[in-house]
Image 1 (cartoon, rainbow, N blue to C red):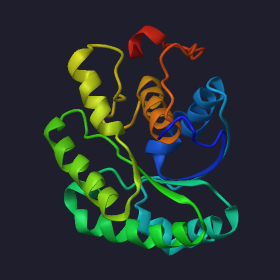
Image 2 (cartoon, helix red, strand yellow; image 1 turned 60 degrees about the vertical axis):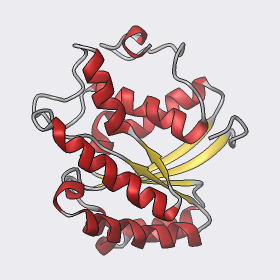
Image 3 (tube, rainbow, N blue to C red; image 1 turned 30 degrees about the vertical axis):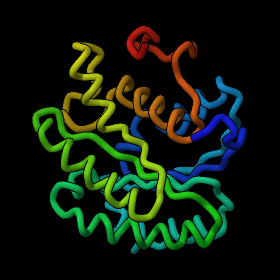
Image 4 (cartoon, one colour; image 1 turned 30 degrees about the horizontal axis):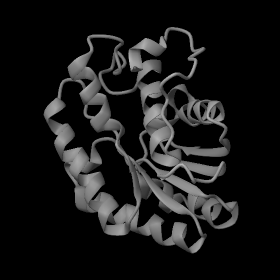
Length: 203
């Protein structure tokens, strides 16, 4: 996104613990603030949920319709792109119709493969990029960036001990990717007052 992007944004996040862990929306807001972008954010999270779970519950749809958001970030259940990409596509299409009708922009949060299954990242990446191209959505390529980082750095660990969820460093890297995707801003040079993290890890 160009530097002419709005300097204030309202963002709704719809997902599960991959978004809620370490309060990813707040990390994104913190980085955005350092670049002069004001954000308001809301999070709808259900542990282990797919987008279809959120759709069937109805709260996400209602929130989108009344929320006057600029962006709605959709995070699919982490293994569904591998197990059933067509189902994921259906889920995203359902939400995209409502998001467009509400005057917002769909953003897809590409997640990462489990630590012991790095070969699955290609499948996840293609699932997100394919539907992203189809509907003209923004895709935050977090999973792709994760594995590039892992290939070049031995630490810090991005996967938590369960080999699935993000550590604080993993969530911070995800926030950096969102900063670039949503606002066209680089995270390099931003002070990182987060316990256990050093800016040099990400530069």
